[in-house]
Image (cartoon, rainbow, N blue to C red; front, side, top):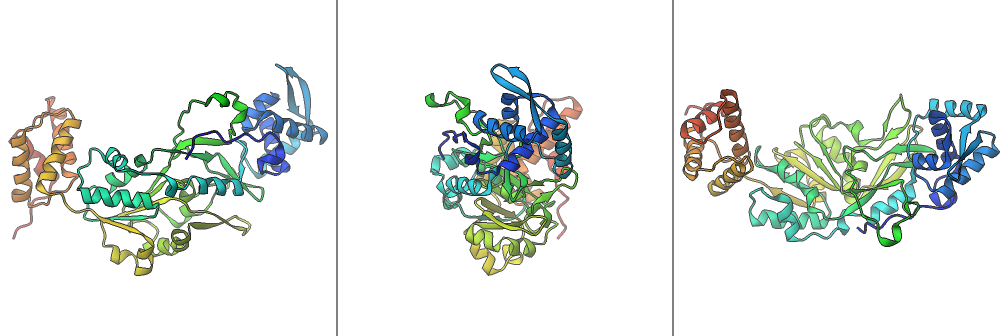
Length: 422
């Protein structure tokens, strides 16, 4: 996706939003902030001078605001008594007083232009993103194929085999950025979409012909492709519009925040929401790329479902979904226990990351101890977890961590349950 700025609308009719919606928003901002210049109002509402001037003239004609003076070539304005009364009424019904929203039509068009299916992915992107995970070439090939498809993926296999670690690196595969709006307007209702916890803004040097900030539509933020993670806390309500009874405006559901990015359903099958309920809810979105949401008054509307959905589970997929749903998950990757050579490489890499001296003989001893004494397979997470045990013990004792046989045995005994008796 090109990072060229979206053009700032210079006329109110070009915003895609009705005059009344923008005037009400401006009046609420004036009520909250008091006297402001038109330039300051434009900064708050994220609209250009021409549009703010039109809003001001409308409010002035309605006797809801008045001129208080001039400031660097710009009117300083404030709400009249009638405007303050109207502003208080508006805030009582809806507290939103942030950047101006974009229309649902403009949002849907932009999501389609920024589709995850349009992003070009190369083998080097996969290798860079998953480093330092130790994976077979077949897994890398299938992951690259899945991301290129832009469709969903099912990561499954035993616990501790690196499914979550792999899934969390998928957003790093993408090299491009996407535009995310602060809010979307539908039938006069505002849905707050931009979430700093999900949407990571990227800095961008303007092109030579973009020196004027007015050229950029500041209602949109250039971000890395988003990644939303939902685990055991996922409930049906989180997939619908969230109406806050205090602020009295909506916030976007998880899948809308994840549009043009990745939605990871971690530990799928262990959510508060039953698997079959989720699968039935998303049968159409996964199949057609379209979702449906409903406003409080019953108005249902269509919006894009354009995201890369990752289902990660250590449960048997056949016990979680029927054939009809599994067909809609185009890519399935099984992550099994590590081989001995892979475990040793993971352990070496973990030591390197921790700046801990790697002793090949100690690593071989640990591998033997895990399989023969603890009777455990080589889970990919063991290297990290056992080094954690060693580091914690050394810190408690005031010592530097070392990989001696005694230390490795103690770490295993602290971490593993005793092997079952035959």
